[in-house]
Length: 566
Image (cartoon, rainbow, N blue to C red; front, side):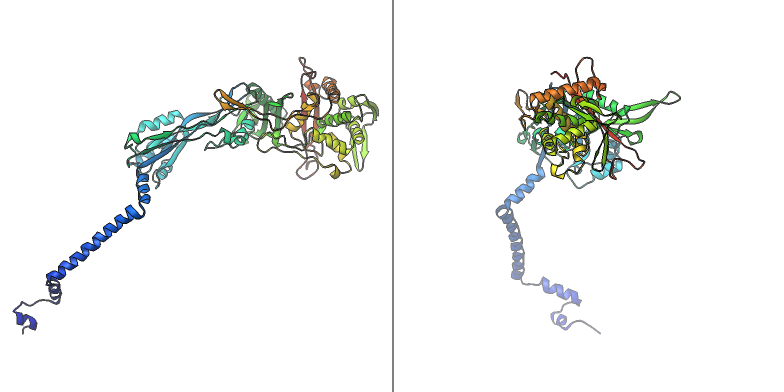
């Protein structure tokens, strides 16, 4: 039986499926309809293209111009060296030396594994670490900062695509590693000042980076050398300090030896020129047990064992903490000359003024005594200072009174920063007279109950050496480059704190202290030295001055000047 559709029979067509029927309907659209459909499609395509061109060229052309420029443009910063830091004689203390940094454009590196394996022993990095860097989706990654010239040459010889050298600078001290560390300071990985002069004068020392720009291919090649543009880097301004390189070196050697010999926790040394306030040397040494050796190691102390072999006992290091400025401590009897200078200036007493001085003195609930017991003695002020009598000092402090004493402490610079423009300077701690306890007028003249910095103490002595004129500390001489140098302005001027007569009286007493008193260890056959010792008990973290075992711990000081007559 035939299943041919009726329409096929009528047209004498062969039998067909339902799908073929639909195709036939499409195939036999009228020609005009097919032409119209094609025209619509072409129109839509042209409209899209012209619309896109309109957006690119009319609506937002700048965006795409910049996009194209970014794809072919290359810009690199040229590092600028920091200014040099020089000593008073023009000797370099810190300079910037040219070094190379290894960097890569991961998009241009072709054989990541091969490059990682080859660079690993040269850069002393793990291949996996390098592989992670070289496969980043970035156009710039640091592989190793500031490498030696030998390492840079080895990398350059490999000629790996996408691995480059970048010129940078590294801070060095030609005068010796760590010389003047606490004063000169140090810089970070980005050449920014982090301590000392490097930090305080960072803006002045920092140079102005240069720039190189060119158009390059995707492989990093320059397309048109004529389009290469560059601006040179400019070095920062140089700084000349008042420090003397040779004196600084000797000061550091001496303070390390002293810390080692006396098994001290730390020591600070400061040398200045009193008449001008110039700082010639300033250093701090810290002592550490050998297992705690830290960067900045400078020297070791040794001891002989039974087998005559040397073993390390303790180690002293030059500290980057400038404790001459940052450390406030109780100076002990080294503060006594300030009290007696005030007594001479105010007319309360003279070097020959007498008092009967017992070896003990009771004030409120406290007992004060001299270091060496003695019968009551008729001592003048010169005698009291020479033997450093605590009782005699207290008796004269009561004569001067708290208000006048506090006035002279401030005149000599205590309780105030020196404005030396170095970071972390402490003002010390100076009590207001209204806050004195019943025993403050006894303890403070003895250098307990007051905190001072080493630089405050020494510049008080400088005022005596200068005939009663306080000259503030000075560290910066000048700034500039080449032939163009400008004197650095001083922050504060000099001022008279006591009369010349009062200063001369104190000068004679301090000379006697060294000649026959507590400061005999400072006697020198070539110079007349004037100065005063101080021994103070260390306050304990738990309060008071006695540790858990019932022992006292001490801070010792010597402050002075020479020649005493000039």
